[in-house]
Length: 205
Image: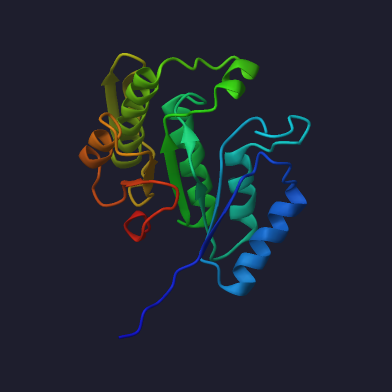
């Protein structure tokens, strides 16, 4: 029996990784057969706040245009940073640029300091998980449906045109607590998965 190892790289982008660094990393991954490059989605460093931090989805879109086979994605984008319609469109745009090589990683968010710094509502763990649940449902709908209506505690959409990216995988990061695993499994037409720190094979296309 022959076993094949699949190798991916995850980079903590908030720790001073410059655009030149990202280009070099992506080029090295493609040259040496690394299958995917994931990055964190944070706004401040956890060690030195003077370190520069590039936006996760702007970075992924830029790398999508410079690579040809490398899969790209976030591990993970906090539900507290962006409206789900904005997040879905950012991921769909990057995926089109990449020709279908992007994975959207979603999570509840955990670093309170960056929320305080930039005025994002942090809330309790229960509230963040509930917000994530609504985001997963909305993002999944926008990627798969022609029109989306949604009325929840945190978000409302009225006859929103969909984005027509049904093959874009959603990876849900978390510990499978109530409120995380449920929405992920309910919205899973194959692409959605629940992960810990590393995306499992079922999270890829």
